Image 1 (cartoon, helix red, strand yellow):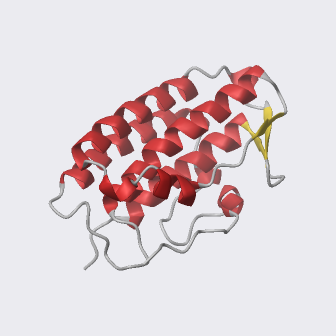
Image 2 (cartoon, one colour; image 1 turned 45 degrees about the vertical axis):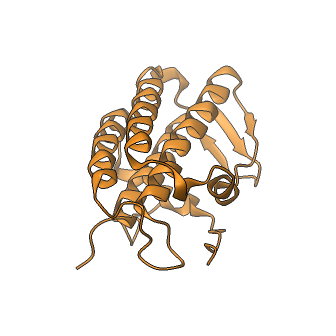
Length: 174
């Protein structure tokens, strides 16, 4: 069965804690983003080493492998968006259809060990890109194709919620 695409606008997480994963973007300092992202990359390594990493918990939910591949690509996409904003204050972002990417890139068929290595590397590169941002650049703006506006600061915290939320999605359930 195909996964139902998530069409919710998650920008509200910048204003209040996520009731699912508990992440509080408003209480997260921009300078903590690189540290938390690096730590999550290591957490993903453990998730993807599990014997059932390629198994979906049900027909309508991605497997840990699929979520890991998504987070790997999420790092790439948000690093590109950050770079666009730093190069051009007010830059626009092309739409990214994460569900179409999952199908086209065959997330479910990828090797969990390879995804773990790639995710860790992408998280490190993205963390380094955010760590290199100068304080005067935090207010530079970008605009998502749906009209949602971000600053470098809010983009970092929005992105971090996405990456950390997916660790919550794959947590062991009792």
